[in-house]
Length: 94
Image (cartoon, rainbow, N blue to C red):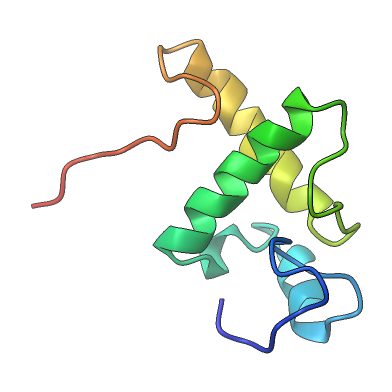
């Protein structure tokens, strides 16, 4: 993500930001706009959110919830295949 900073830097997508809003409402909920660092942060944030009774720090934005729910659903599926929740799957690069 390369646009201006937000009120809560740890949020993946921020309320009130038109660019974030557009990304959140795209078919992939903004996943395709994340670079490697932001994807890993979103992956961990989704897991942290589910593990902390829905009170992550910084607070969730309504804009990022669809993204985090999508990532959480994938994590649950991968856990059934041996990937621990919160661990970003690593592959090999050729």
